Length: 441
Image (cartoon, rainbow, N blue to C red):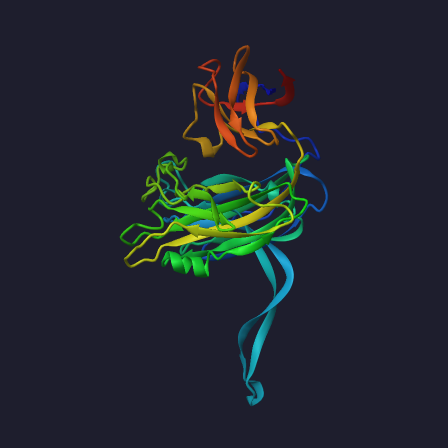
């Protein structure tokens, strides 16, 4: 058995944010507090690194109020990478009648594939607009997304789109990418879009025939693994079953006619929203979103059912239901098929996130804290992660705790580090340094 030893050094003092050494991290800034005041796309062409290897790529989406103030309503926002395909379409622009001759006017545009990198819902922003309950129009909130698998797309000149599904002003978007040098857990051979759109749910047969249609996908002969990454959320509720916003439903993935994934589209933790209080119905659980939070992104390992060198039919669907009323339920769904080369590391554990103690606004409901430190432990290695010894310090001498479990590649678990109240104060910043070594039993 192999045990990973993680050394976590914790300093319980307020400190400035740590900076990476020169060359360790490349920061690409795209949108800078761009006002999103009406439904539509806010596009920006960006130059990404064309060379270098990166162990991790993180997208930071800072949501704030527009310069005209925040909106009262919960609207969907999403960030997309748009990639040129080299193919072209003609768009009808109008009719020219100069000289008494009727002629049609067309504009030639290049087709672009669109990949959703992240989705977040705006909060009920009335308190920001009225300077009440501790809020004002200077409010902002940061969301983070692991987009390491999208390195082949985030290369050279790329159009990044911030899409705002709101009908009033407004919110703002700030987008940055952090390219952290190193070797990724796995090299990505290809990313293939499966779906990226919104659609009404009239009935299951209509959805299956028009929107979630099966298709054949070729698996690279050199692939050692495949996965699907899915983001989906349900909207609308003025009907007898309160779908799709307030009803629990699953999406399904079939491979060659056999169901291999059944995933609930539901968030049951809206009451723990860090942006609180809000107006409206922010406390109500919803179909994979809460006002003021990210829509959950799902990762499904399909390595066991997709054979390298062969083609497979992949079909997505939604568990069927009947509804009646004045508003058709709808879903916003994006999915990609990712094919990987071999794992670059056999054993690799990481502290993915420090939840407490933390001064980050995403964890404000957990902090300030006088109690255990809390981290997210994640497996980035090929072997299952079964045992991790964590040595850390919290205002006293070294402390040790051992985590045991069974995490497959890409899986994570929240871990408490027993501290009690040793040296913990109401406002602390967790300073940590991580060292990893393998201990063979």
